[in-house]
Image (cartoon, rainbow, N blue to C red; front, side):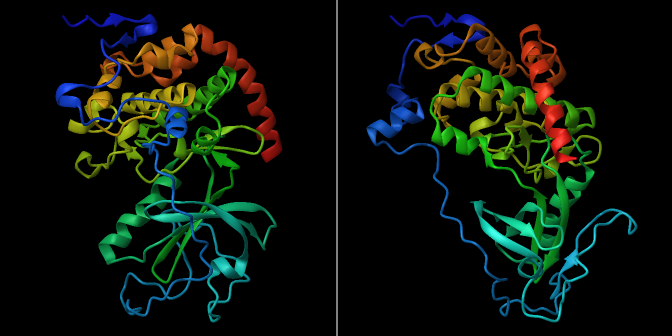
Length: 372
């Protein structure tokens, strides 16, 4: 006779089985990343390819430079009025073979690489400051592809600045490629999760509070991030968390739901599969991010465990490390019903979270002073 799942502390349910059986036999067992490493089992986490540092713009001879979507020289990309647009360096020389990136920046190293671009750390020759630059891997395929890629710049520019959002400086295109210059952060939460399998709870609370403040700011302007996950959350050299990568941002007042793209399946709310993104879906993704960081769980992309976690069914052995309050807040944020999930400001006003928030705001004030 099958056991009945028990309602666990803080809204979680302990499933009656610890691993899938019968028709779910092909699902990988739920486990932590540390367990996977010790067993030598491939993790659901994909180790990124070693990024290549772009030494120069790739050969574009196979693309005709006379096409309207290919610019042979660097040109600012901005949707602002002409008087508000950033400018290229006055020391840029378009008549030389070196790209704008090579001419005006000293490249220090690789920060990462995704499907659409790689990010390098640089130092500007103009102001001597350090930045991150995201360089597109592929050139524009056509005018429609260029228009779609430039939407990322539009989304950066429409975000009102906030200390917990990665700051955007400018973007330019050259020889069919888009470059985006942003604030440089030391690492991502994904880097932290891969290096450390046990993260102290005070640190977890601070990460949560920082991104809740970022979300509260975005949501107050009816903007949804859509793709919250550890690799899109960055940490500055003084330990402040910032939400970044705004390529999928959805404007509730302007964007067409038919054109929305889904975020990473590991952190995706179930209701988004059949409907447009919501603020509640962002809260869910942040809750999943915090669950992963606090428990070291190797989150599934799909399958029975994907569904069980979204019903808050997790074996007690994985969540026993969570304190009563952290367990309660995570369960609140990943509630199966989006209407029951809290708003970002509601979590920030929670009596327990408020204690950590007051301490965190002191550090944030110091960060602002340092940046200014």
